Amino acid sequence: MPQIPEKIQELTVGQLAARSGAAVSALHFYESKGLISSRRTSGNQRRFSRDALRRVAFVRAAQRVGIPLATIREALAELPEGRTPTEEDWARLSRSWRSELDERIKQLNRLRDHLTDCIGCGCLSLETCVLSNPDDAFGERRAGSRLLVERRGSATSTTSTATGGGRPSRALSGETGCCDD
Image (tube, rainbow, N blue to C red):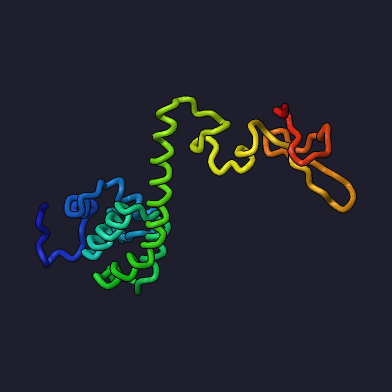
């Protein structure tokens, strides 16, 4: 990692990239999203203050654990202008992000467990596949699309859960649809 003399208070985008390990394009992207900032020289070149190194490290560490950039930007916006995130800031934010990460881990574990079933059969059946048809409450009762009956006052109307919404039902039972037996 190239060393930058202490007397240099501003870094070029190339120096920041070399020191942080982030690509120049990533730094431009971070800047466009408000995660870091620079000033422009009279020659229109970017100059970053040295604290941008810590901000980039903060962004990259948060990204590595799956924190969305919008959430990272909100966290950085809470800091006083120009102040870099400290160890205490990271500890506070990581505590607040922990429950969100725990929930994502649970979701990924469920996906992994269901993926084994899909690899085993290979069908990706819309009847039973929890990956291609997640949280299908009606699918537990029978296969195919449904027309759901909604009651408004004394009149009966229908709403489709498939793509042909609003077609009238042939019967007034709650689960009549195109794939009924």
